[in-house]
Length: 240
Ligand SMILES: C[S@@+](CC[C@H](N)C(=O)[O-])C[C@H]1O[C@@H](n2cnc3c(N)ncnc32)[C@H](O)[C@@H]1O
Image (tube, rainbow, N blue to C red; front, side, top):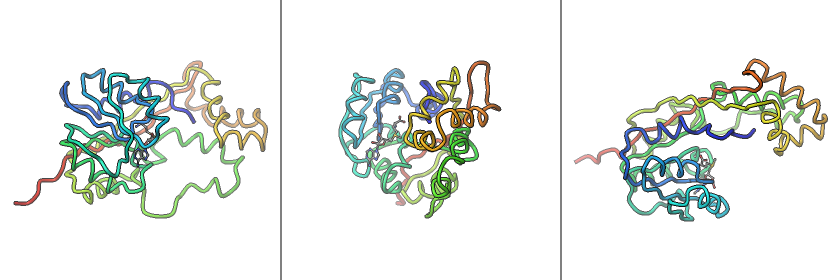
């Protein structure tokens, strides 16, 4: 699966809702810097942090007016008006610790996660490939506590991190693919897509993907609706 350009804008918009221009934003797990560039365009003063040097090199090209630092989300430094965690919490070892750190250095914490699997059309990529994958890869229920895609779990984890939840909003972000190739090509180029194509042949995989996505056809292309949740939180006041 690949995310088409521009998919994140409704989400980024909610992350920065009500934040005045000139505010300092720490973009934790900034990746290639797309949110950093969006925040700069909104007049924010942006610092991006990531543990991956190659992501930081891309981010510097995407958002040259931001400052970028190599670092670990579990150990933050400085003081910011907003700490943004855009699609990062599912990738860190300890989301409670990361949110705790965000609340320690930030006046506001805005964190986004995917909605539940059944709430987003991207699940259709997995469904289309499932017949070509071994049974183990088809099993999609991981062991362990419920993931943060479960809103109650997300609220609980924020509370454990010492944050006061102001809102947990839903944001729908459309993924628009202009034609069949833009939908199928990146999938066939991914590890899982190549695995399926090696087993069944690229033509069979392509046909299965297009059949699965037929209900999402939109003119020449495809339009998927995907749900995200945005946590809007601040450090809980300490009892006096
Ligand atoms: C799915 S990407 C999201 C990137 C970006 N926020 C976006 O929305 O495009 C997750 C990012 O978190 C970074 N990351 C994961 N664990 C991290 C950690 N402990 N400290 C800092 N960055 C981390 C990864 O290197 C990756 O760039």
